Image 1 (cartoon, rainbow, N blue to C red):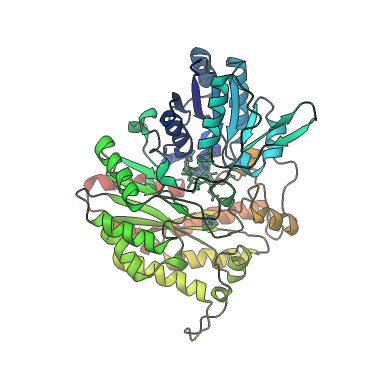
Image 2: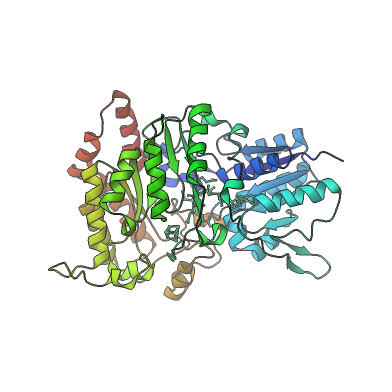
Length: 492
Ligand code: B12
Ligand code: SF4
């Protein structure tokens, strides 16, 4: 049987699209999605290379040269919305360099918009919808056996005879994550990965995913499209094994848990944290969480296990906006708090309470906010900026609304009348607002951009934020890191 030569790749993406105003501190994270595909391929007996054009700082010409030199039979390209044009350009380069190769596109963007992606990227033979591991292996098997690929589950493609987009049976998510090998760390240059300066305290620092899926329905997020609403977790044993593997083989001192909501399954995470505390290695870690799920007991366990930072999507200081974006899963969260003499809504009080708990325990918080959501006025944006300033977390990130395909925010933005027509995928950058996809009609583009700059400038010039960050400097090497972070966030 013919041995097929396979590559999965992350396309070259410009720094402007990737990092925009955060360019000065830009960093790189191993692309776990395609690394999972490569290791799964390997576990099924296929050789599969991984090329991360971002960390290699490849331009499209470098990619083409690489493809010409290596002549692959099977090429998979990962694709997010803001960099969809880069993924399409990579597919074109792949087609030119390896004309007979099977070329497929997968990831969040094709999953949200399979029909459109098939039509926009005719160089790709197939678009893969959903999780890619099994679909990719099934295609490799067909290719090796010289059989047709058109009956493999989880695909969309252009039906030449019917002259329309056709679909195969949808692929169901992998139920047991323990069957997956660890991502193919050995296929990427692990020593080149240094994350964004705000995302670590100790290096080397690598990402891990313990759980896939998210049951929440925040309207600005399209996360559910690929990984689904149902939570699937590694077993605690397997999760610890993955960390140990990174510690022993790559000297990891820090971990970033990429799970959309690390604390979503309280029982699982409590058990995991207790076991982590008993290990003979120590790591510092950061994770993503929702404030409405936190409490002092959980935070204490997080701290004891080595958590130095939690990223929390606060998003707004306006309760009507929090309700619009469905930021809580229960409606009482938006109502006045019965225990508050001033009748402030429960969710805002909960945010403040849990941020203060983090501050008490010495866990840093990176809070993110969206300014100018549909329906908001300039005054509402000021309310959010002031709420952020009151919380005074060590780091705050301010974004303008980006209505991703597959998200309900897209409908909300359309109804609001602010969604741009004839936009390009690169306008979806969440950090470069030169040509935003959505402009709040009550505020206007120039004012939205000005408010964003104002938010960053006012926030990081607050003495209590500066003090809180300086207090964290306990080692000489932290000074350079904090200067870098300050410059990255304020753009000075
Ligand atoms: C880590 C991460 C990053 C990292 C690394 C990204 C990377 N390439 O791995 C960094 C910091 C660079 C990043 C940047 C951005 N990110 Co990000 N990121 C994530 C995060 C938290 C985890 C990604 C991950 O590893 N998932 C786990 C793996 C297993 O899933 P996966 O990557 O989706 O891959 C599976 C499938 O999609 C599929 N698949 C993926 N690629 C391919 C390729 C082929 C050929 C096949 C067959 C299948 C396939 O198979 C994989 C395995 O099952 C997700 C949220 C999440 N929890 O998923 C957001 C997320 C993917 N990011 C998002 C966004 C918006 C961004 C940014 C635009 C933010 C910004 N800075 O402005 C940029 C864009 C970067 C870009 N490439 O263009 C959105 C995507 C929205 C969209 N439609 O594009 C997400 C979904 C977050 C959200 N909830 O909105 N991100
Ligand atoms: S923003 Fe986070 S909590 Fe909300 S749906 Fe997306 S992944 Fe889930």
